[in-house]
Length: 125
Image (cartoon, rainbow, N blue to C red; front, side, top):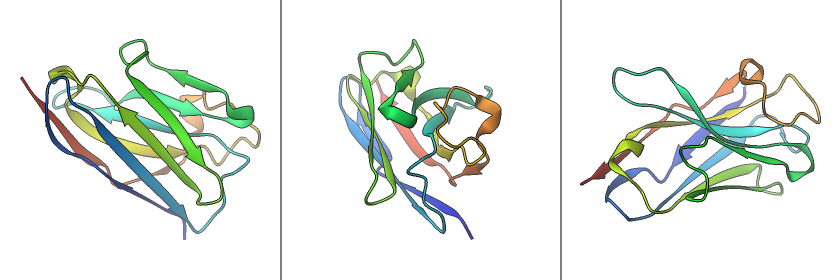
């Protein structure tokens, strides 16, 4: 059984930083893309960042220059370093893995078929 377990969410003031972690178990994703999504209250879930084959990385325009996605392939873990946080970054953040496309880049949103339970990030003004 595949599980993605996120940690690291919390409450932070605007301008602060948080680092999210997501540990995968039950399957190795070293050849597959992993990413982060978020969902704010009353809004659709949106893409945040992805890191795929060849260490290619992709970011939503809203987080470019502030967020960094990284992976530890030995630990089957993906991270999201979030700096210069803004109140509009407040959301539940979900880790996801694209287990459908080996050597994928992580740009196909519909390919993400494994999801974590989510971790709350709240940024106060």
